[in-house]
Image (cartoon, rainbow, N blue to C red; front, side, top):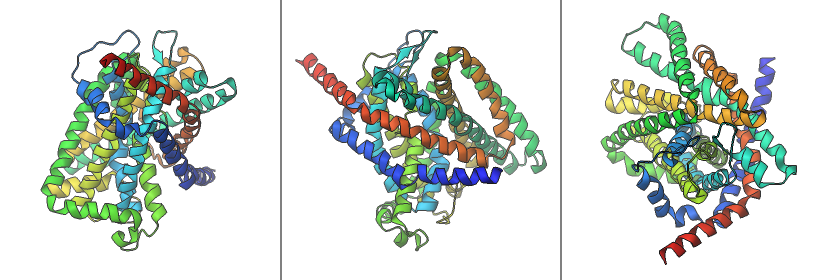
Length: 466
């Protein structure tokens, strides 16, 4: 029975993340870019000024809301995760170095897609019975389109609930336990025979931590995210830049292979990866999986922001994709390719390939720091997706079911720490992709609203300067 489910899921998954889906996601990103006159490039300095330039501003959010910075940190907590470490490694191994180029392309278009999603989420959000701001794809589809499209909002929420338990929780906990156990056994702190016991202990600790954060409501989620995300990102970026600097002589050749391999992968991988479409689809799909542009999930966190300017918050969407994919994913790729570690092209690879890039440069001691970074990445993802799941289930039912959902969601951490999650990961990956379909339809149909809000925002800013 399980083999049948796995076979059916594999077929669906290959379609969802295959060429037709990639064309759809890139197509909507290109369409939105044209409608906004490529705002991600045209107003990139403005976006950075409104985001990075405002990071250190002290501001308290109103009741039931997050500060704009807390909102983007909460969204980044879900996007900057193990996909940046394991996902990039998998893309390079299966699609060759050229997959990195297509990851960049998906990010450049994804900046506008996420920009649009955030604008719509803030513009069409609501306040629930508890006074909290709620929004996201299900709300901008419900409030922005006619009743005949409401089924898309319901579909998005259903897929979202299924996805959070696997992609957002169990698989992330599994990554944390693997990273901790690897560090503990490498330094002979625990024997191999104690790993199963260690898994249970780690699972219980994570369950308690997740429950403590999520049951504290959106305010606590925001406060944890704004501290955890900058710490883990800075730690990882410093370690990665160090690898690049120490292998600086390899950098020009790596970039040459990335560009050349994007259009002629067999020339770089020795013929193992001979398909242009394999390189492209792996790069695009892993990029989307990492930055979530097109999935709509990040906009759920942005909808909580204490702001009355949707376009201004939308700039955080541009920054988010830029930071996640252009900076962190690129650094991961450089760690692998510059360090000179052997890559078995054409075969699946994961976080171990990225970790090998670090250890081959620094030595085994760095495994402690990579374990800490991976734990932070995975834990932050659990927190971010916990918020997404809560908003999805609240939309389907009511706010009364949110706390029971949080309890169940926390308990899943024990499952993730102690079980083989191959099938769970596959089904979650499929549901993750299925979320993109109703969201992209909604964003496409509401593109006129995005264009109007952008035009009005800059016209207002022009008047204020006069």
